[in-house]
Length: 436
Ligand code: SUG
Image (cartoon, rainbow, N blue to C red; front, side, top):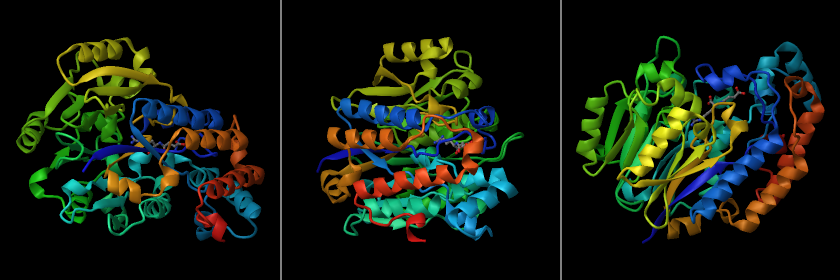
């Protein structure tokens, strides 16, 4: 049976804006109140998907969620017509309103954690949508994400869906952003690397060890093939609010910053014991500081196995613009290791909210048979991606400022876009605003 890795990118929604909502995410804080460009953001995202497809890789996408999320606003006591709900919430708390307007589901590395079928006790693909309990604007994604995953992977013969973990922050779970899989090839049995945090001096840890352990149990992973490692507080306090800001794993390679883990030597020996063939490629602090790593997001790259077997890094242009990072990357590809190609893509609109190429994608390893059972509307080819580009161009604004969120006309525009998308994708009345 042939297995492939599918990258499911988040299709960036029409309300993409800069609201400074994520404590510990430096880009989000710095750009609070800036003018966003949802049109450009979505087209940049689609261009990245195209670039991966042109490398011969399989590409899917997850649709945006309905924002503003009226269901949440109504649950919080704002009533009346849809327009009145927006007006009242905007008057009482612009921050609350912006939380319900966030397009943050674009970062699908946080949509959930996946257990591919070669690794699970029952031979099925397991999905757990992340509860994203650490931030209000992200926590309200979990319910719809669960339904989106169940909609796309809707065949009980192959797919198992677990609800988001209970217990909110006690089991805070940020999905695949804190998880990596190492395997000789996508179809071989993999080892799962779960990275959790402990609160730093400055910033709180979002991913709890207990959450990662619960996911491993639910996904029926072999305990011998799981490794739990603590992220360093230095990385967290430098702005690595998710571990994928300081490291990425794929195939036989773990590519990371020297200061990613609390106890690197203990972590590396645990990983080597579980994955004897692992190649650890580490950026030393004297070449790339944690500050440069967080600014440039070089580790938030997609580490991709190309059809020929070589590996490429698909990186944000910010990492090409940083001298120290660029020279470390050039040194890396010139050395004898599987990574031998660098591809830089501009995803600046997302980067300004702290989301790089790796944040924008959820990896799902599927056999050909499993892929055939998934909903084909969400698996891309040239025609389908062109249709999404046309949809974006027809519905998106090229400029959004914080005050726009209080204008009911912006809500109407966003819902019109979502109605058109659900038609395009044959989803029926899927979203909460379509059911009220
Ligand atoms: O959760 N930013 C996201 C970025 C997520 C990046 N994902 C990964 N590292 N996998 C977050 O902090 C900012 C929204 C705002 O401030 O408007 C935001 O939610």
